[in-house]
Image (cartoon, rainbow, N blue to C red; front, top):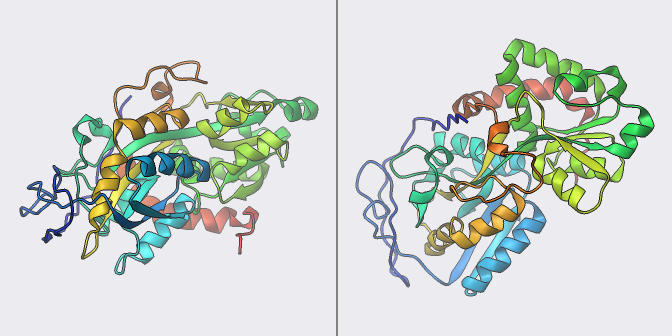
Length: 363
């Protein structure tokens, strides 16, 4: 599998004054002028309070943080959890007055947009060398580091499909069959990272003109666009729709819980993205943020991620439960640089065309 994780070319040279707090160690930095991060002189803390923005699922956040708090009981983590699009928009809006210390488990395509606007501060967490090169920014000192990947999947309620007499699904093209009209739910790419990676994949696989034509035809069969990437899978599992365009883990977890669903990966290949971590660029870096980012790619954290996503960013995944083969073979040759550069135009055009079917946003 070829992966083009190309960072957008923008690095701000910045100085950093070390804080005199607890333990001092690190192997991190920022390319350009020698900084505290680059020379390994950052001060890290084992106590304090940090604000973390994340797009991880609620149940994942609680499980992961329980493990973090066992190791660092004196660091309080205030979590702001929203869907990828909302987290991205919030970080961009707060760029000149950042409120978060860390972004955790949010799409790499969003990280690249933030990086291009100087919203991230380069930092190499402990153990970053074992993260595969294609899963972290390509700068000398990374501005973001991936932890796991997720991919487009179709979650089909087999009972509903049989009752409605729906044809078998193997590909994106199969979803255009008129039999599916009103029976498909998909996520809105403006609020959902899963929605964006799916739309981006279609445009890359088919070309932009043909891709938008395909999305026009698919819209004819869509009942609703949700604001959560996992919600289409949950709706399919409960029988609220026959087909949910979602992601692999969301469908496989519903199946494991006993829902009458099958998870289908399109034969053309799945769009995908990375969940990534980054240090927010602000005048004063909270020393506990370094500690959190070190933990967030540790072996213990990776073991937790692997329970939810088989594709993690170190070359040690073991068996792929729920998959017929190696899920890496399913991933398209994703041009993240193109996706990041065209993100704003894609989202604007999508909104103009299809937003009328989006579910109402929660108050």
